[in-house]
Length: 366
Ligand SMILES: Cc1ncc(COP(=O)(O)O)c(C=O)c1O
Image 1: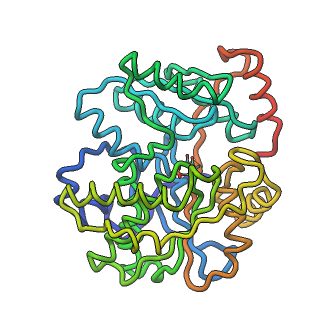
Image 2: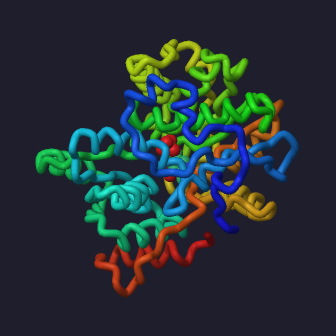
């Protein structure tokens, strides 16, 4: 599949949906444009009334959903004069890679502190891509060392981007994505949606979408906010319903402080969210048979290609429990369609254990 971008397609959706819907907020929220907006919304051949929000196409250098959260997070850092930021997450972290790729494009030095995860093709490719960038990578041998490594980095004066950039400011990046969808509905490019389905890992994307759809409703862009179905790829309590709603309320409060509509009402946010843990399998990063089935199903209709850690599990839910959803449904395709260059294994400055992990991931089905 070739990665096209929204810029190729005519659409009535504004390039900067946040500015078009909420000019005061856009004027006060520092952002750096990292992606190509709007990402397309397309019908999916897998079934009737199924649509795709192509967040996989969000940036030609490296896309996926993490580009959205990094726009306001990096905007804030650069405004504060920060010159170096450290990403955090698993060895195959999409956020750390997105930070390294896009940070470098904007003159930011980057580091990454990463903990192990089960081997997979996508995770191995991400680490090889990360090692091919100038990012200073620390590969922890054990997740138990992560809090200590974080503390040491803080003491050393590092600015740390938490896993998934799951902070209110990061979630505001996804408010812009929800507003794009609302504009597409208003322009008749997509029918009024009843459901949105996506993977939830750090909670940033889901929380931002909840706020964005609530804001779109209060601005009169859409009549009704779709129900957001978040499919766990990390376990409870990381992805507890109340934790996602709490981040959404934090993002809504920030939006209101910046001059946006008040979307902080807990009940409305909570009622718009359903969380399912049925596709998690053995846990974060462990591929599942159902996830592989969903990947094959999407490949069978020419993509987008999903990954085993995130989008494949959300796809599995969509094709299983999600088959019973009534009305137009939008599947959020979150894994970047573009893979940045990989370091040659022989050149990678890594310990033997990491090399074995990369080899096992490389041998796994993509
Ligand atoms: C490809 C992909 N999909 C989905 C998610 C889940 O998004 P969030 O962490 O915002 O819940 C992530 C998080 O890193 C991701 O990398």
